[in-house]
Length: 242
Length: 300
Image 1: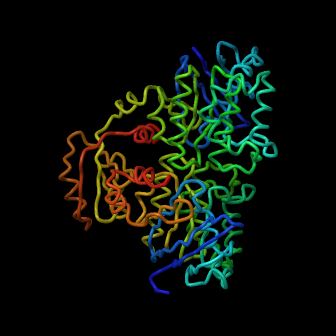
Image 2: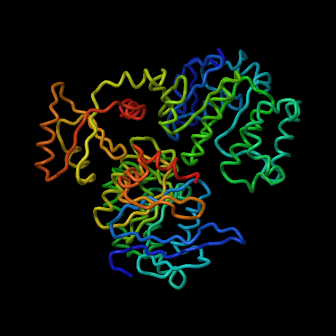
């Protein structure tokens, strides 16, 4: 594996019975890159992501994530990545501080390190005043920002974000992306799915899945040029229905 | 008027979900409630569909009061809640039959209204609703909400989590329903969908920020917006945020939307500043505001 690649996938395939959900996809994601993983509902994004984060065994093909093999080293992958989805964020019945402590413990951080991280993170997010409030009482946008920070607690090489900004208000959505930029500028690789096409423009490179295959993969600029359209929304509309 | 809302307020314990909301929707209008999660959209839908009673204020739907005439309203409206609420263990056809029967009608009687949508899911009519894809569930839910030929259709975030292609198709479907004389109140967190409505209300934290046609809302934007681009977007954002004359700085697709606090702003000054921050390939040009710009300006 090339040292600069955090993901390498080659002909990665997943079948359910005789249905091919992910059909021999090949791609690489570089260190510090913001990689947008787009596709219509049902195109195979979630299935592909599940293989990459080590919770679903591929039917065929090869893949390495953070240097580990998806077949043999799935447990190592889980320890070395961050993951955040729109649905499962944090525990609503724990406070901000308790959530951070809990996830820090899960990731195997020392008590001292958890304390340091907790302080830093709460300060960075401006959550000092609500640090002892239950997470369930916070607005969605705050939860999502906190959830993202928690997914980075153990300094993973790569973080997977599955529709992190769905339903979030436009200002918080942009603050969220500033956090993504910051993480990437510090060397963390970001793998993100979204249905907001303006967010696709924020990515360094974007792949678009159609019916289980990657039909396009390039920088937003090159994709727009290739399809001769003004924005990523039109690229998506041209491609996504084949 | 198809819907009237007068000074409606609703609280849950100490959370104010809606605060003094008033607006009207004309007959045959496609009216959008635009706002993020937690804005109060669902609470408003539940009050108008008679599932929840407001603390203060009054409202009518199709001429009936939401409290005293609630039974008449239930017969005259279709409601598609945000969460899929059909019977997962019934097939597509069984679900549709069920809803038709409840409203004392048959699929045949109003088939014309749902035909265009139903033909797309008809090949799967014997499949259980729980086994359908997201897009197909959405189409079935819309058919079920339409089967009794409602005068007013309530759609609570029908396109949330739906990809751009399916979203576009869904809105084309709504436009055709509107032509058949149905009044539609639809909510969405996607600002680009606002432009497809006749009129919209921008809503956040239980309050209406503005109500108007999408064109007028954009026109009232108070500032000149500039598209700014440079070699490194993250550095560009940081530099613009640190610039003392900025009024607003928001990433916007491939550009950053920038407004300046000074009346006599000269873009050349900004170029000089950004160059001093070691940015290169700097581009600054005027651009037109969008609904999302307006929303952010009002919500700031």
